[in-house]
Length: 97
Image (cartoon, rainbow, N blue to C red; front, side, top):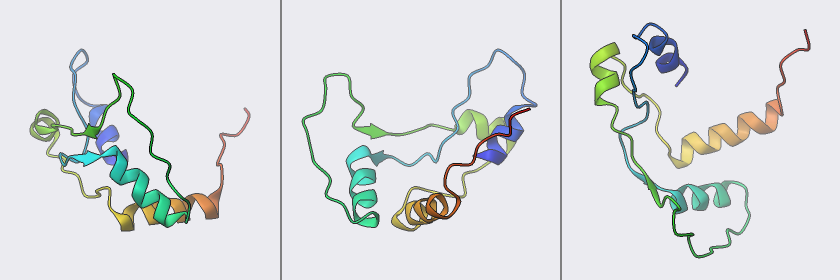
């Protein structure tokens, strides 16, 4: 994502680009993976009327404009890596200037 955002700074203003993996994932699947990693039970509740059940990003326009392609995807391993990083690093804050 950082590389994509860096590339986006050079694009013309006034355009809308989607940056994402291009692969669909259900929110409940992310919750289940995190529940397993954190060894905690996930309580399922009924979705609210406007709630998103699945995320899917079409990044074609951004790929054509920049040549960028996603290299990381939401998987058990990538979420475990993220959780581990957060546990090690904690909340990193900007210095007070």
